Length: 309
Image 1 (cartoon, rainbow, N blue to C red):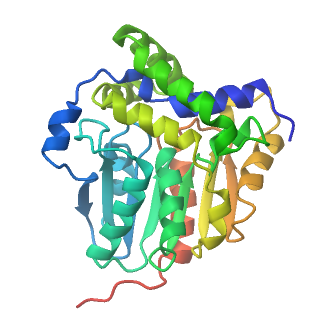
Image 2 (image 1 turned 180 degrees about the vertical axis):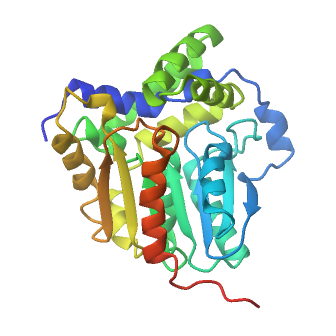
């Protein structure tokens, strides 16, 4: 597909959303000394296990309404990743630490074929875990994310070719003042979320995130290409994409082609594009999101259900 400036802008916004609000509220040195966990977990409900992973600088609270919608019919594990939304930071690397920790968590708790539901960065992490431990994962739901973000604006991009630019982005983020971060945050989040009150919530999570963790996560997202790993994923996968930011400028079919192209190595993936929601699909179009999620769970969540012990 021919690259477009709008696609390029979307990728940049995807990488920077949430990170712009970081104000240094978390003390990385103190958190490291206390040996914090890779993530915090809130667990509720019974039944087939579902693991919810939020995006960059987001809290697990982003899934609150989704968990309420499921009405306790599933064993829900809602993560908030280290360094985000007030959680203590952990030492680098970020993605490698998280993908290992999530797989370890599934094993330690004996979760039977859990379904991983991830938004944005959380979607990348869900794919990574499913590729690392295909025998553990029973399904994946990716909410508006791609296995290699830079390729959305440059199909020929590679982790090596983008590395210098990724370092420049990380350096720029570190140099921003609080005022610059807050201003950029509002601009980005308003393009991602329709409801201003939700923008306020997401901005607060960003402000409570550790800036070093966020800048590192952005760098690693830009230089991680999961496309070669997708063939290892054995679980059925649902990919929910949004194209509202490009509506009227880029045809839906062109955006959908980018998504399908990046997931081409994953034959069990079904890609569907939302016509009304922005990046936070579960907030912008909850009814549409629940319909897709319920349909996926109805088809796949009856497999390998946990039996009473």
